Image 1: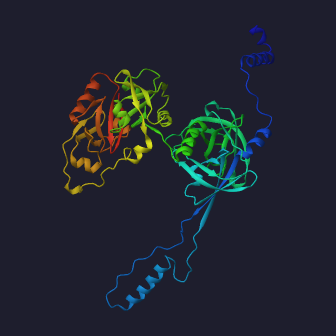
Image 2: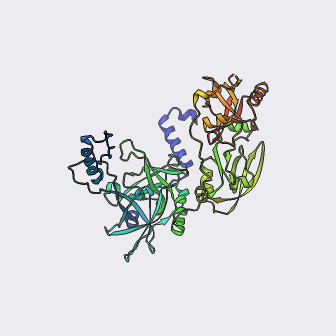
Image 3: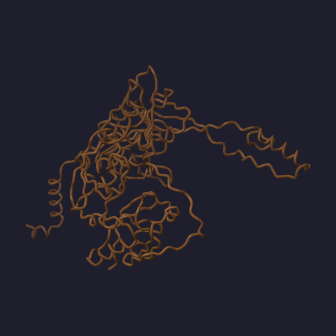
Length: 504
């Protein structure tokens, strides 16, 4: 059959196309239009108008009074000039005091509770506002009060009081919005009023470094300035995202917009309405990515993912449960950690005070640890998440060079961790190990970014007491034919695992 069809290429191509169509699952056809959906959804979307004080940039700073000899004929003249300048609140003499300026901003929002008048928008839309007004689809203007904000995912909840009937949106499951799914965006671009645009979900789980819980939905639906805080709808008319950011070299839409998924927003909105603030779960660990090099050094099974614990907060939930630096958290309450950034979101969305189970990979073994979660906001308020490194350096002229130990296999010179070194490099008093005195250019250590002042705390998950310990463990790894060593490195208040490969 193939030899026969080879003489009729057009017929062969047609038959192949028919066979492929038969084997391909049927897909949902593109909608013929969005008229009915848009008509139903437009009344649920509002314009948000804010007014705030503008900093007066035209005022000149108050000058210092010139130093004049006592009895100088200019002394009285300059004093009179200075007092006049001061009384005019920094204005140039001869000019009237400037009036306080106001700035206005426009954004979007959507009604989530018609009975109680709750509206969702972006935090950056209303941040610093003295006055917030809501403009409904029929151009009715209402005063709004701020219920609560969450800067971490850029969400704010507003409230209006009115006897007018409001139309609320419905939340959808953002996880059901797959790449290629149709979406509608409705908002107030450039202050034009209710505007509908359509597109598809272009990508999921985008991290644009906007916050600790970045998990954006990317869309090519036109989103411009003023769309911030507006909803992204699926074809059922459900909110699956809050339009928050755009990527644009020009400031206008280039087809790359980002929305916070509804599955993240909804829980935060409920907390803001109930408490006026968020109540997030807190584990008390600092984590980093498990790179292929780190996975190999730790002996992780193939295709195992997770979050590598670089440090554990003292008196935090994780320390209480027995979590250690060097552990790899592979699952949270039975859910696999597919990527390091997934863990903070899972923890944050868990209920404060709830008991969860962590799957841990520790030194070649899998273990399970139960942990009772704390509250992130309480940890922030009590200073458990912040450090206060010592400032300043000693006088360089008083410093004396200390003896160093050279580790040529990786290109380091190491010294003792003295009190003077701690002060010079802002090293925490509880950090122990060997300090990096110098890094050989183009060496394996240099390629991994190690620098003077770093402290080697562990080598291959074994603690270090002196520079000679590092040298001995590195040389043992080279002799054993290992391709690399796993260093646990402290830099000021930060702790990270770094794999340094030996040069062949």
